[in-house]
Length: 334
Image (cartoon, rainbow, N blue to C red; front, side, top):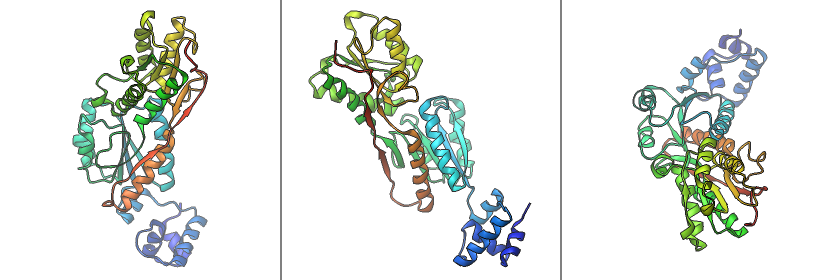
């Protein structure tokens, strides 16, 4: 295996110059830098991460904090983060720990303050535990992904607009009895983005003069959670809505399964709109508001690189666009 000494000898420079040329740390003339890089390529030299860390003063590691790893959104987001980190030569340290657990408390109190990281990406942090504020005290550049981003650079979609867009689609079709499916009843403190989507639904209903029809069948933002909430909401045929806005596609799919098991014809007897454009959305012909979590992950890494290069620069809030994708789960009311 080639060493930095071999590269330096091939390029005709000192080991220190070769190290600076490959790490980007310190001044090296452009012609010399190219000569060193060519020598490294010819010798198939790969710098050891520890050596690179010593040369640059960086750990070459980025910590990513997520509440779950088994949900489509988080898996897609993580793929985008990983893709972008690989291009910058950073290792990914993943902390997938559920909110409210003792392990998560230990992470924030003990692990992160001691860990040497070039940066942190915090995903889906909620306001109730003051975790984002605690992360800002850790001596690492920080970027958040999600609706709650107090004092940090952040990437998100406009969750309120997504809920409003989904509801307005149903109103434009002629629906007046529209319910909101999924999301916890205490979402304002435990699922900030879900609360904003619910608020978007309420805003659209009030604007259309339908405030008396507002109702929320709460449940976890998952397929089982949407199924359970759907069963509760649709059980009494006298009070069934003609249409549903779901907090996310997983809840929407759960609601669709509940409706079909109860013998309802979709979309003739029940129209359903989700938010996400989940991998299974097309399979269920689900009308949805599309977001692109992989692109959010890539954008978060690009923002973090900016924070690494200029830690004291102004924070940046990047809101990525979302769009309504109309499939066959919605139609005019029966």
